[in-house]
Length: 295
Image 1: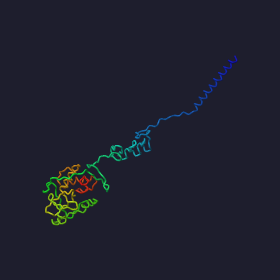
Image 2: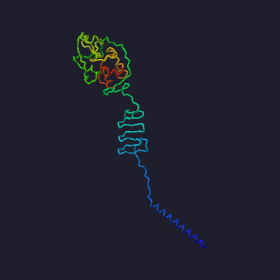
Image 3: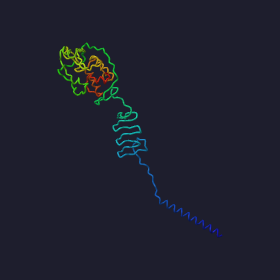
Image 4: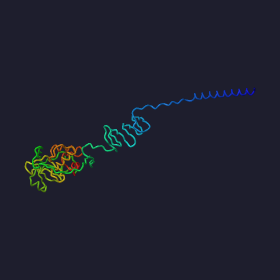
């Protein structure tokens, strides 16, 4: 009987102790603060990097792995520089972005003019370096006086307008040129009898250029009053015809290859010179012929 009473008392003590422990655990849980995890704030726009998500800068630009700079320019993954602030795209393929132009280390874009390539001269201007042009001899009616191109009038001591702005030794002959009227003997003596007849006029050889020999013969015809570069030891009419042919091939001249340096041909030369960064002489000069591949 005594043993039975002891067992009952022991069970009662265990129950009381267990209940006290459970109450203590509840009180401890009530004292602990609850932690709330908030979802990350939503972002607008689209990230452009390869990182762990966009990060908005103070200027509203996004930065991912490299992201978008504060100037609104895109920088993509490794190996790219993306779109610059001017809209130009510098990438692996060299493709131009909308409204931009190809720059940087990508593949070069197409040349915008009709020339094949460009390079910088010592003055920092771009000149075209076309494919080598093979000189030709054209069948021209140079023994006759032209009627479709109006002849220029002689003006004693006339200088070429604008030539003072054409810098460099290649343009010295244009800066020094002035119209002179002399009789036949004077021209022969001063230019060692190297005078040729072309299209109703006479031309004298002067330091690599052909110049009109005003006064050599009465009623002479000249479509242009100024030096003409002596390309490939050709007479002036053949030089002009070769220039016309070269400009035709590059899309600058749509007229007839007639060997006359008239207004249409001079306008085509000026257009080509303007497009390639050369001084606009609108005449047949050495730098222009070299640029056309006629060297």
